Amino acid sequence: MGSVGSSDRMDYTAIGPAVNLGSRLCAAAEAGQILLCADTVSRIGALVAARPLPPMPLKGLGEVTVYEMRSEF
Image 1 (tube, rainbow, N blue to C red):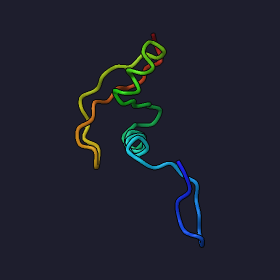
Image 2 (cartoon, rainbow, N blue to C red):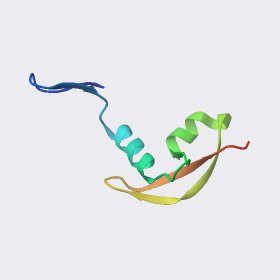
Image 3 (cartoon, one colour):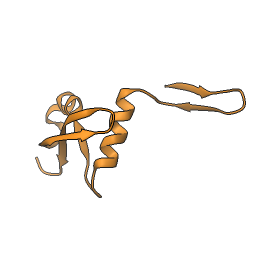
Image 4 (spheres, helix red, strand yellow):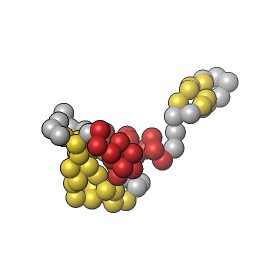
């Protein structure tokens, strides 16, 4: 996170692989669907129910292991 730009136009933003992955997962999700990467699922453990989906090809990232967050426990 930090400032990006020039003296003419400066923005404060987040950049990097995690931001790119989050953006790609949001774009791939259907309406009302929440997609999670394997790292997120491993970090949140039993806090949410998630079911694995087939590996998903994501632009610039290759095949990614993806989980769908579920409402039931």
